[in-house]
Length: 365
Image 1: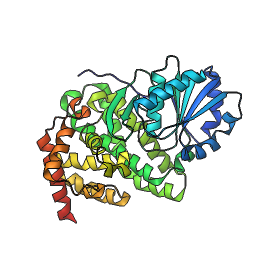
Image 2: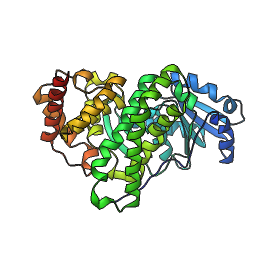
Image 3: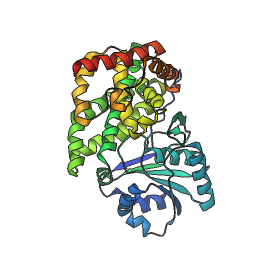
Image 4: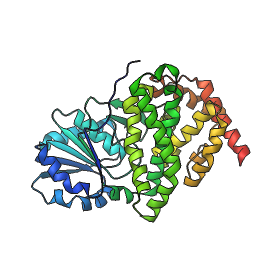
């Protein structure tokens, strides 16, 4: 397997008041006409940080995101870029919006994307790929782009105003970076590859920052208090986690935890749970497959403190029979993520892991 490094945005900045410089950033790039794709609730908060841009001479067009990163939504945004004759597209919102904007810019020659996240819920603002869904929210896989985000700009106070559950989901999604990548990156034959060593170091940094500062950061967002711990966790969720796959490519991108998430999206009962929450359950499944019960014990208290799902019952799926679990496991085993990784696992191993996890945690109650 070849190693293709896609590190992230061409420019990244995270600081209080940074959005006051957005107009200048656009002018330096020769951009005078912009299409802004935004959410609803997130835009109500974000526009308060964009007053200088809104009052500037930059020509602005606005469009509401449809809610899912579908191929149809991406093509709609591509059409809007053309219709408005925009020179750049700015995405203001959460992960699915970011993915749609990145993809639309990548499909539009000469158009740059500028990303302003309103949530620290995943690494979507950083990565040059988009996770695609159906209109019903079923995951289809991901598309890698040949063009990076031009600028990723983070106002920490904007992230502080986001819903707590999205932040917790981001913490779980970021925690997965270590557990999904280390099983491959720790192999002796990769210890002499400079980029893979850096990727593993970034993954370890994800785990340590989340475990050491995650609970404090959650208390900070609940108290609406901007602290170094909160900013550190936000940058870990968005930037450091994005570097894991950016530096490690298919060696580090994702394995069981994300593959489990992808297939659970087929169940409507799981649609009330966020991406990171389902990935959090996937971490537990992966550890059960590896029979790493000590690590499951170590993480259980952390999960409980953040109300993260550990079992099928926690995801409203306790009714699944062994036959149905087998069907899910079979689909997980052939998920594109696993097929493209060096983490080899069978349907039987996945099914056994899911069932043994249920049995093990039931005993622990």
